[in-house]
Image (cartoon, rainbow, N blue to C red):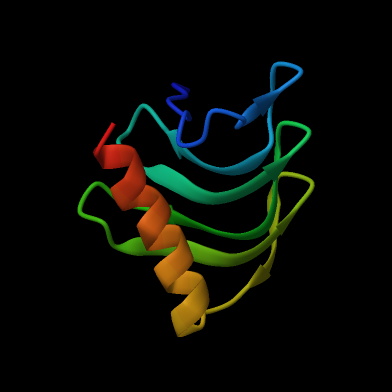
Length: 88
């Protein structure tokens, strides 16, 4: 796995991902969402190379625990994370 995660200067805390960020997988998929202590937590989504949502919902302990369609605000948040990262 390849990580390019520097959306925010404070994204890494004690060398662990924390806050919002985007993670790039070798196959081109990306996870956009929230992190704590280097694990995926809260709202997040995995996107294909073509920006289609492959899976989304609530993450806990680095696993998708509540698979759900994101509401419009949640989807806007994760898509904004992708756009912010593309600009860097």
